[in-house]
Image 1: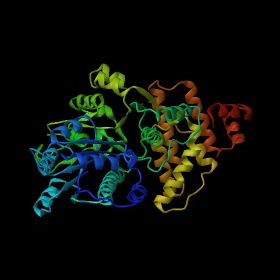
Image 2: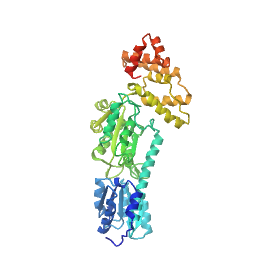
Image 3: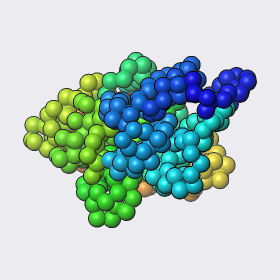
Image 4: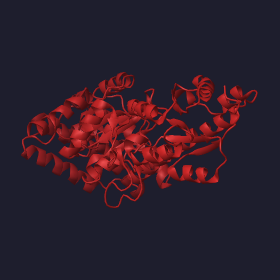
Length: 467
């Protein structure tokens, strides 16, 4: 081992405790001195999931092209090319790995150049064990906070409709297969395509899969593909290097970078332009991405879950969605049921939204009475769970349900659907009975009198519908 290396007693125990979570991290050591490589590898191998070494930037470049590293420990004095010069090069190529630069020369100019090139830390040889561990810990902490802040900012900006829900709420027969599938799919890395009408909780299902998986230690990064302009969607997903296009004044990481080790949720994936579909397919197949303007690909470890409210098979048949990408995404398909098929879940959903929204709005939570729930059960919910949430918010703000407005919306909905021939006579009968039940305030004796049927018949109907 080089004489430039000194050690500190008890460093192992103190720094293992101080910086938890290293067991999932990977580090690349680039140094031409065998003693330094051996020392650093022995120091870090028991703490990290993977530690690789390279004696030149050429060898390091090969390793970086094969797999992702969370951190690079880079010696500045290397044969043929300095560490700082190589750091400039990899940054220009779109590689954003954190770098700790080490050098035996106390040169202020080198330190300034290293930091300007994007080095996260700078250490002067000789250094102690606790110094290098501290530098690595700071890098890991900053990287985690940077990703966490980015994800939180996106979620605040997007203000997801079902934010705050811990999962899918309800135990209806229509939802039970979804609960079972999510639990099974959480344990495998396969891509999943979630389909269903708008507002049925596709993102909630994707989040549940992520948080039940071993990727939950890293981030769940959502993007609505239909909300991003087609000319910047590639940069949004893959990132870009400085000067890649007009206005690219600096390099920028993409969403794949922030989802590293976690899950990327592609909502409304059917809205992706055809050119972007080709690049996404390649990223899924090769597990590598190429930032816009970069001349090399970067390995990534990201699970992709996609969702759409479109009929994807029809989109493929009509040439608007690539068949090969469809089959790559559709390893497993999860079809989310509409709310009208799980009316018995409405009380639990509405109560959950009351708790969430009352806190957000700063108003006292109000219990949902039978009349309100009966009115909700009498509606067909074309906007699904999202519409229910919005109605609960309106109810909390106004203090009551505007029965006339709600009734008209229901009646118009039933009439339109019947005119289109999309609803059976049985469905219209159900809507009518539930409407009368709502108007009777949930009183089945009164409702059966108005309907001209026995209470026993009404109770049997309600039992069939889970009301």
